[in-house]
Length: 613
Image 1: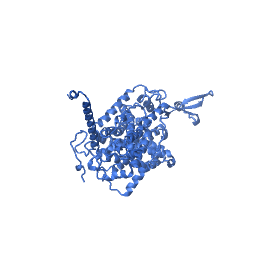
Image 2: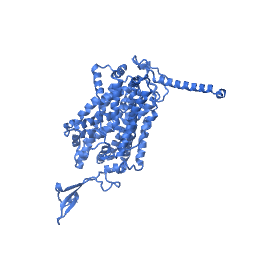
Image 3: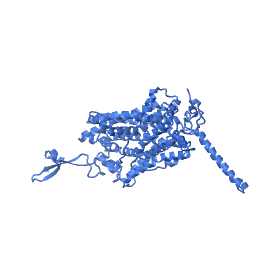
Image 4: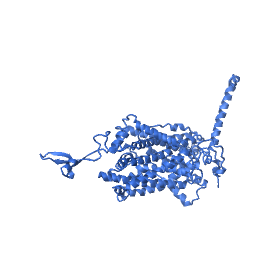
């Protein structure tokens, strides 16, 4: 059945909308492949490369895949499917989609505010990747040895001394060079090690970041990073210049290229000495099944799933809102979620094979070189690459991969803001107040808390307030799922019993933030979540009737809630008021009020004739 032909297609007035699009107000993806690659780019990000491998190693190796898979099946995939379906059904962004449950509209605002904060620091990471990419175009790599920028604590080898007894009976500390020259040995109890910093670590702190002593010391503008940050924003804006029509084409490269690099790095990694030991630590004989009894392991698995898939942040709703109404987002959700998790596991082999090699040549256990986050991306892995033949080539590939991974995810984050520009025309609230956040700090302290809270509130709003009957009716009215009862029982069970836990201890590595930094994080959290009760209270005050009637109204869909296009509304939504009609009606009311006010002013004025002139 060709439902598109039943839609009234007027002249295309927006340059961002194609002539074949179903929705001529907002536009649609040029093809389902554009949408799929955009979702994969959103889900597969930096965390797949620099966070998951270390989490797996730390939480039992191969045993970690058990809670990871369970969390994917019971938490990640159901929530991913729910958000994609909701955005596609209404063709609205993460704020306007809460017309379904007006009391929870603040959740959408919170999601977008969190994304605004994330976009700021995420682009900083992209800027770091750009800086290291440019720095890789030299030989030797600037972090391969202790050059002029280093201090006396920098060393490529551990500094060990031996306490020996001299001929006159006194104790003397000698280094390994003296021992080798004198063909002497040192007993283990007499060996003393002095802590040193590797060149890659000092390069990151002293050259790249020019890190200060703490949050109390802001320092000046670091121009090389500022320019790289500017370039990162230029890349993002250029790719999103025409919305999904341009970003949907860019992702053909940015979503696929990282897999090419990962395959190249894996092939090179497994041919290095010590690679097997690194992989054994990652997922192999060093796996510890007893870790499954630790609640932290399950929390880490759930957190990684949520962050990696990008759920409860509004991005999935925004991207899916540009789908055609009958797109099969169920199969899309499965493809993207499985691809995302498979990428995480695959990336771990590429990472730990190289870390195994660096441990081998450094005569250290893998546990001493394995890191996550910034430590892996900008210290441990660059150091390992610097020891390979043709090191600049491997470094260029690695940091260009990080750049494309970050850009992909940033597209989805910024696309939420683009979606709001379309939605605000049809929603009654002034969104400008919610875009007032413009905070630039080195680390977002509160996004983890807000992210988990948004997930819980999103489910409360959609599942328990909007209701399972309305939700399932949305799916059935789209006429795309011909599934058996067992199918729906599975998804309903996952949605109804979804949960998440979190902890909060902000720090930079082992250095905890000062009290005022932690307080700043809590203020940022409060600024984001305060809109939930504010919008709920505003909607309650705007509703009419008694207390119970007002609660009923703000817990029920608005009159214009439903499929965006009239041809998709069917019997259930046949009386739905279109957003365009409501907007035009309000405009007409405003115009009539202005005319009425002018007429009254002229009647009451003794100089009416002069005013008419």
